Image 1: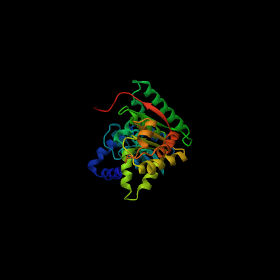
Image 2 (image 1 turned 180 degrees about the horizontal axis):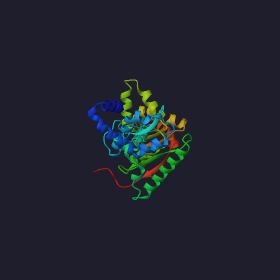
Image 3 (image 1 turned 90 degrees about the vertical axis):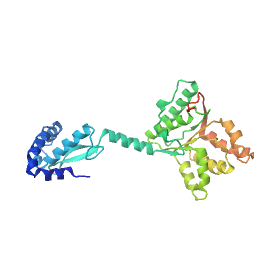
Image 4 (image 1 turned 135 degrees about the vertical axis):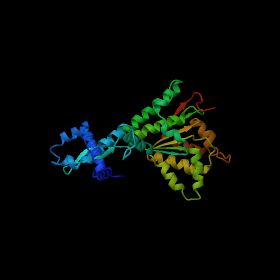
Length: 310
């Protein structure tokens, strides 16, 4: 970063700049914030502090005005303030309101971990969720709001998640993403996983011996949302060694877990889990998985018009 004060000190010793410099000094000393600072700190400043620190005063006024006028500054995103240092006047740069808000937003976004999810999920909010169409949407929103409040007030307690099911395009993923963003604002880490894509990724991870690492990341997250579960046929390995392991860990550790699906719980068990991708029927294994799903979540239906672009 350029040292603006040092550069100005070199310039003012050149005669051709002296007259202009005197004008700039006069302008700096007429600035209301400068005058207020000098008055408030007169007992802390050395006798010749103003003369010795005049370049700092000019830098302060110049950079402050650039921030005010949205012009490029010496330290983008930061605004200058005057401070006393060893009896002299110095400058410290602090974040602007916009910079603070940007840093806050970045911090929030880092709490949301998305696996094979649309890029825009981190930009949706509960206020955008349409409540006017029917009572299903009101009920789902009420349950989401209750969860956010309860979890935020007691993040270490046990809070049952939701199994949100309904037709294509009614807003299940949208509502879960909006909930995730709200939880992140309150300091909670949330992971959203598009489960069919994750299952494919896990199969690929076998050859790299990465299954365990990837599984640990998902199963240990404070709040987990498994999106579009049941969208694709599931192998016995994915059902038992991936989904089953995730759910068992989360049940044993009382970690909040959410699901979205086009199937009701009964349909998911009988039409999806009970028959593997080879067409083999395995009802007992399906029932074992569903015991964990039912413990971790309560069934909530969401119906309405398809909001996806046709």
